[in-house]
Length: 108
Image 1 (cartoon, rainbow, N blue to C red):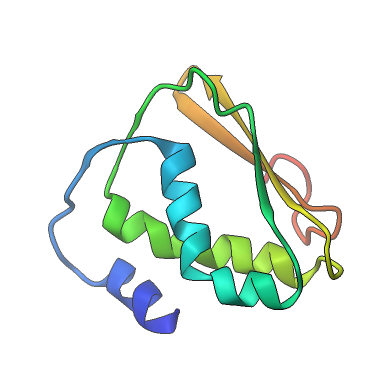
Image 2: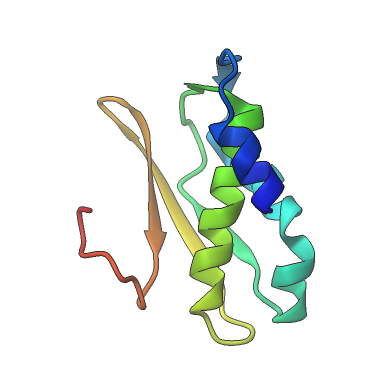
């Protein structure tokens, strides 16, 4: 995981393309599948229908999303779902991570 994050921060030209954000999140959760399975945590995506594609560097975004999911999963009890709510916004798509144990205040 550290290698993937270091690759994200490495100076290289962005390879921006159109991506399905739900698909990027699913692929990212696949990177940490074993960690999630050990504690019977499953990723649940809400609101995935009818979303526009997002412009991003998917290769660089996947490990960042995986680390975010792993951080949230660390605060969950065994068997609890990791819930992400997606919705269309003025800027494209918003992702809300439902994390009862978040260290950040709402809106941060």
